[in-house]
Image (tube, rainbow, N blue to C red; front, side, top):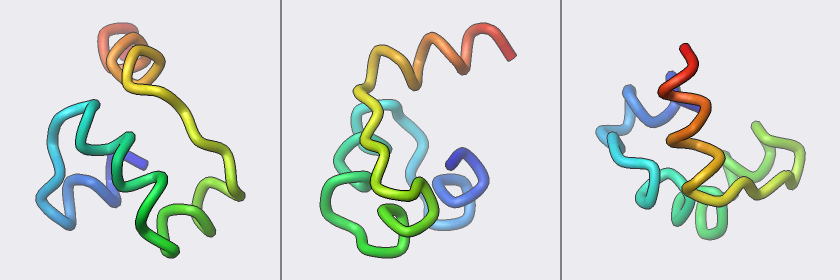
Length: 47
């Protein structure tokens, strides 16, 4: 998900969450799992 966001210019967790809902490529990549922005930013802090 981060690689996709990096390549398409989407950096923030909120914007990645929006991409999960509106972009068909992102939905296919995540196999229709839709994380919220808190879990995205929490994962970013861990890694």
